[in-house]
Image (cartoon, rainbow, N blue to C red):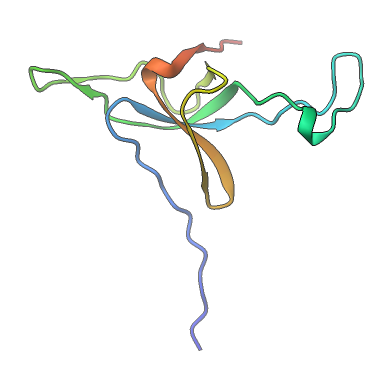
Amino acid sequence: MATATKTKTNLKPLDDRVVVKPQEAEDRTAGGIYLPESAKEKPMTGTVVAVGPGKLSDEGKRTPVSVKKGDVVLYGKYGGTEIELDGETVMVLRESELLGVVEK
């Protein structure tokens, strides 16, 4: 009998798309009040896990993406496409939907 092996799916974004793993939503307010699942704000920051090769210009050259794997980015609340990959939720966004890189 053959055994099934669980493989990790790799998602390689195209053009200027970026794959971002959203940070967990806060489960408490700043005052210490615990929030139910329905009241949690949708996260708007996340860590870049994959970056496409860049947008193809009219001259046929690639314009590199300005973020890299591991960057923490800020994106719009309703931007991108949320997908589930190997039981994990990730966002696929265009570089233009990113609002900025969070620096610490």
